[in-house]
Length: 273
Image (cartoon, rainbow, N blue to C red; front, side, top):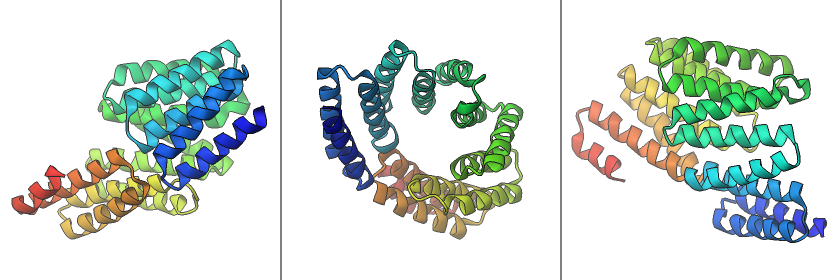
């Protein structure tokens, strides 16, 4: 019954945290099959979310992730769960952003926002949507909009003492200042993000992201040794997490740093990986 579904799902999470992603997928899929058999729609929605998360955050297979988030959305719509629908739309939007389709990302974020705006109990989910909108604006060089959205999330996160949202908002702020040509301010924001990130038990990927961003800022400042030190630290974290997209991103940034140092032979070995 439902207890067996929960047991399979819990085992999936344990395997996921142990970076055994393929085995975790098998458990989540088994839990999904059993949920379908027993007609437990809410549990089925949750399994699709978990399968989506593995493909998205762990294996960087965003098209497959999106398919599973869309299945979750369909179920939550049937159940009339505003929270479930909004979370699925947020996740679908992030997959579109990571695939470079910023217009579709914006459309999904806007729909998610409509579902959560008038419900104070969903403020944290709303913050998740708004920080994604900020990132999406930054990618499209809409810096003023990105700033305003990021600041709104930072205010909520400080007021409610949410460490993850503080990290996300400060990280985005660091990127914006870097793009606007103020590296010192960017580093201050990223250092604050790191302080909050150290308090998080599970989200090691956020620590790697901050290290990577600091590496890029140092590279722009011409402080290449500092850049490489931070990028190597990011790579070590991402290798432990077995995050394919992040590892490729770290290697690319290290290659670009060696190019800036006029060491093309060394750069090529990183860019080829």
